[in-house]
Length: 331
Figure 1 (tube, rainbow, N blue to C red):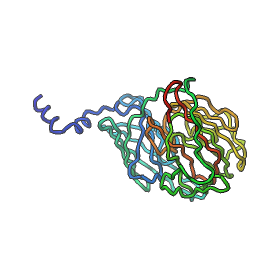
Figure 2 (figure 1 turned 90 degrees about the horizontal axis):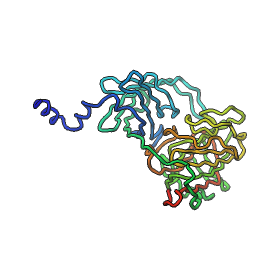
Figure 3 (figure 1 turned 60 degrees about the vertical axis):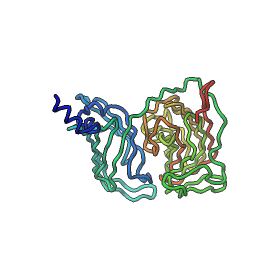
Figure 4 (figure 1 turned 30 degrees about the horizontal axis):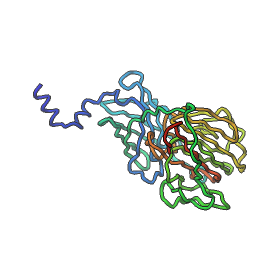
């Protein structure tokens, strides 16, 4: 026993954690920060959920590179204290001005260390390391105890004051034309400099044929914009909380027409109305979506406008903060 205690003391606290980490430590929802990718050319934030680790019922779902959708992980395994999974993407034709993509095989390895996940991704053009922390439990709900604060005009119709690009302050690819916020389709994602927690958001958009875009809530959860008029609602289609919440209907108008979103977010409860039609009411957001650049789910975040999937225009963007009845303003 004395020898064992001496060995533990020599290894130190960090190594002791590695030695005694159990497979079950991987279980939970994890908000992931990607290192070495500060320009967010792929994405800055991923998300992983693991259940059943340490049992024969191991399962996992992942949001991250390469396409930002929510994917099940059929090959997930824990061996020798390492969580492993892979992703195979077939070749794809080009779209929105992008060239075709070659097939890819990508491997992920994840270790549990001192209460966090430390991982690596290899096999892509750029390889990354990443760190995951447990997603916070958010107990707030849209329960009738929230009242509106003073509305905030996010876009002044003149310039990009109050906004910045994710990759650079210049927000390349965005201009203001005749009072309209205009994205070329090859633009940096645009985010507000201010951050917000619970709110109602009003925004009007117009999309070119064949384009798609999205509105990121707190810089984490995308309400999809797509030129899919007349199609059945889908997890990648107009109004979806991207790959997480399916809209009841596709209430989108044809490309080239102005359309209106009214979105209410309290805690992780989201209600989305498109062109006066309620798509889902108090739907539960389970975690990050592919638009996410800020993984800190327990903190206020920006409003984000996607700009790299085809031409899009916005106007009349107004946010109304919500505060709990009798409580302080939350924004």
